[in-house]
Length: 351
Image (cartoon, rainbow, N blue to C red):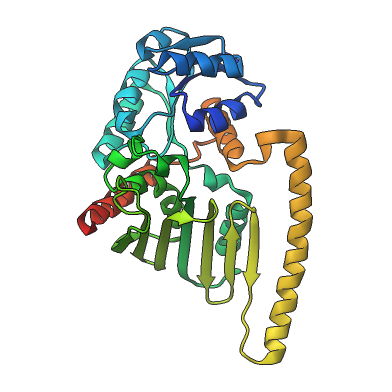
């Protein structure tokens, strides 16, 4: 392997154009060498937009290049077949979530990767969100006390490109759009709850979009060390993700998009206690203002380098180059797909 990691991108859609390609191009030790998309105009257009030297409509043809990594950004229904072809060509793999459609497919992909001596990793980028990492540290170091519960929310606007496009591939998935959006909140839940198991799913359809099986879902989890709740909404007035952690000593409110953590310390209904709590919150909000100003300057100077995607993709590249471990393990990946499959089966049964 040369000092410059040569990456071939498969799929020229939204995630590739807005996340993976521009972030990889920020890295000095990475070259986005080729782009492959079954639609020639898409492949050619992405290559032109980002100055990528080679474009293909055939994966087999792209794999004739001397690539180190193949980055799969296609619909999950295609992940297994694309991954098998790339692994057999001797390429390491980065795959957008969810890794596969079934646990059996996950096992097959990892087994094949081991056989051919290549590394395989799914993209769970919010593990590298600074606010999430701070929350993980506070929990692990005992600041919140014993864990009681974890609530995770993922919020999608009703006018989101996936929602309004009835022909989008996500609507053909088990559970519809939820198979695509649930991996993120589920892997955040996995960080804190041991053996998280979905017990109950409630769905609702509030929009008039006939191709949506449902557009609201609430999932209640049991776990060895607490309870969990996942909220998935496709009717939100804003796009974002939230994480709330409840312990015996403290609660944490985590804003992934604002990269902030608010601590809620014990208080009673006594006016003095309420006043102290409000002063603490006011102080924290002033601190967030400084963080926001700093982030604005950082974004202006470093672009994507502040993003969770950058941190995750940097960790992946380092692992391929032998400088660390992959950011997501086989066991974590398998559990994530298993939980999402179970939830979506329950969603299909409820609609």
